[in-house]
Length: 550
Image 1: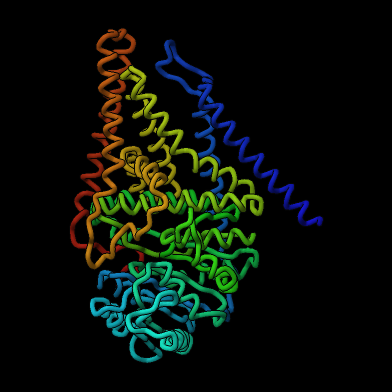
Image 2: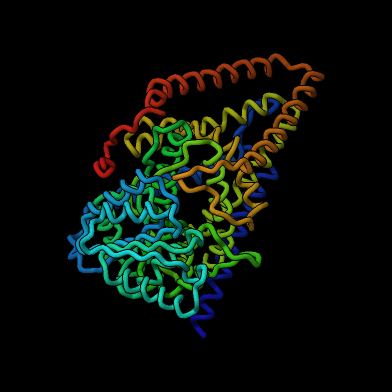
């Protein structure tokens, strides 16, 4: 009875706190209260801006404190726990798969079990099995081509042969140090389920990895260290960097964004033990927890339909739902492939945004089990795109060109501040280009998020396999609509402003702002050409990270 009362109080308290945070932001936004402003409000600083600025400062502060804690050398480990590395593969580029498997062989953890499950069992998929056997060697290696999967029978498969196949998969996975299973196509969640189900309770911890990922030799030990030192931690993720960062401008900007996402945002969450997404390329879980919620995780539904994306985020949410903490460590690293073409990147971001909004609702059910920071940050990040969309539309249709220019200047100013902090924290001047990502967010990612919310129940991989890239133009729909809205606002403002002559003060502000904005782009573009562009599109260079040299 006392436990139920305590839970009820925490549920009420966190719900009230969430409403207060949202109400405060909404009040600051609607009232538009300003601390200081110039005559006719050409420049101003208000409560809403102060809240967002304070959020960025506090987030950066706790991220810095978490990194300082990470740098402390951990205790010597006995390395007695059993660990299985599960690799999900789907139409993978042969070169990436080879790099992945070579890096797996170099992992400095004794008796590491490796399980690769291929999503597909046709003749066109056998090259992945061949690569696995070639790289891992014949000794201690087993494989099985399954006509079915755990939830769908293959052609001419009987119930008896299906059961025999399940036993064979389990025997191969548990009997061999290196096992490769090819099975009937079913999506990434089906692949992950096969690995988890076949392993059962035969290992203590399960590490997850994608087939386009190059792992650092110390990645397993560093994540295991976090789990071994604190029994209340149920899952831990590592630092995911970009393998093909210089392949194009979109992959480069993704690389700086990845670093910010992991080393600031997730590092801050880790300080409070509530990392909300342990990424698929590099994560580790307590196997007892995985086996506990495996069936519920696989059979997840949303609005009456089975979920087929957001597998990693939902795994993390399941751990959080049990009251366990989730952590991040920058001492565990990997490199992973990212889209090099704009359309493929846009589709990827749309898919990730769908899973974010869906899992946000699920995550809210467990706010009371964790630190208030999880509640606070979920409210801030969950509603921010909607406040930003409303702000942009309002400014573009207000009838003053200066408002539009001031907004663009503000976006880049915030981007520069975050980029300078990232340069300091990482010790790498390339992070200055993080400010360029702001424009990509405003022009593409913001409408993609809104589109993702309106099509949240549409399923699919979102991005194709890497062996054969399939172009999907659906992602251009929200971007086209968004640009049409902004163009309409710009046309309206230009027309309205032409009927209301500008004052000398406003002309001075417009000229100064335009020159400043132009100088910013000239400076960043010049630096980009001098430092980055000469590398993009050329033969992949050797990275400073030793584990990339495969």
